[in-house]
Image (cartoon, rainbow, N blue to C red; front, side):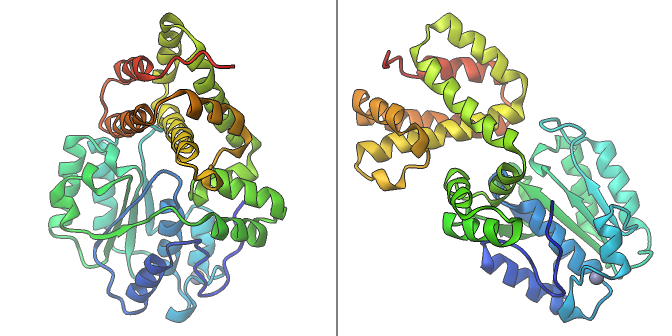
Length: 337
Ligand SMILES: [Zn+2]
């Protein structure tokens, strides 16, 4: 469910500076051939790229782009704008392969059909394997003037430096719960109380909040990830290793679980340092407080560090099973009730 776009309006929540910068580049026709949008999962990279694409291809006067009603805007909405191509891994968590980049290259070489430019959007670009990344680098070396390439990645560090240096970079950051809550109420018709709660649970990620508001299963994933964490603390190593095996099977889900665990452990730290108001998972406050009491502060800090490096390692395709198992060894066993 996406709300309609008003002419010239960029309905993007947070990161106002990035929106302004891109709007200006579109108006002045100064957008670089390659744009690299980075930021955490579900922070809004795709949403921003989508609005930018609509604005670039729109046929309305420049200050009204995207208009949402011209032929190009309508075709983009229904997925058949002939000057736009989306490239992404065939399955979430899988690699982008060289054949996909070659298809993209062929597409970009053609003359635009209905617009002034041809746009390729590459999602999850950090998952490009080496030959795919090198193939893309070739495209970037001498791009035809009508080409606009939008690359989305979790982090610029995960992209070939030679690609980063040829791209205009936009790094999106998590936004405030307040802005997220307001947007959920105004544009997604969410009840104010629910909006506040989802905004708090989102960790500043608008895309997460929208999914949680529109798909109850999404919120359940978070609840089960936290429950799993609390269960694991009470369990012995063989049981933990079984859980590790399950976790490692779906690396996208594993990454999301790690993010929830990191936020939970940050909550423990907040409780230990008496910054209780900032706790994200208020629903689990009792359990988190019990952890905070029983675990020394340095151990919490060490675990937060472990979780952050596990997140980074998972993005770099280490063996997910080994990673999950070593994490199981690091989790505390507190036997609390
Ligand atoms: Zn339009």
